[in-house]
Image (cartoon, rainbow, N blue to C red; front, side, top):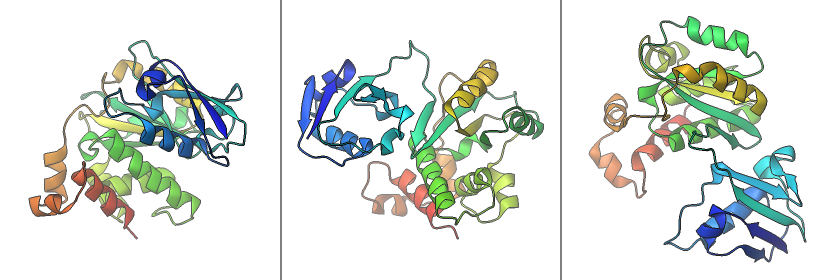
Length: 257
């Protein structure tokens, strides 16, 4: 049995300040899934990427993040993180901390921009993607999850994680083609994707802050992506989903061999 304390916005989302979960041996992610299913329909969304979760008073990020195993009689505190109007760009996939940042147009002149970033932050895996190839944050997160799982299973499309990521956004097994179509473009908006330690990601954010769009993935790229990947209305209509285009793009990325 696990005791859950809900504070701030989490209390509003679940319409209660505490819950008892009559299960143990759950991970934090499995607990969050239970909370999401328990949320009344007419309450604010519970944003899992903006939560501080403590287990018996210990920040879960100091444990195994969302993979932390919960035991009988554990007390879990769920606390929404307020960022004072600034955007939280760091999130977690499995045990990896990830950051998505959108660079304004006219900042990137050539590939040296990415090369210099990698030299300054050698402990981070950094990739740059032409912004038009990213549909949404959810799309990006799912692509990154595929690449990280491929790395863990030792079946990446390339020897480097950052190259695998780019190839999956481009939906191609050809590295040169991925770079040509979905890599950084001079004077165009680009998404910088970085994976590594939270402390290094924060330093990267500070380095790039003057060049960032206030909203990551600021434009609707759906029409471009449909045309680029020859996705028809018939294909879209055949998918029973809230986000059929996203699901089709993720499927294309996942089946690359």
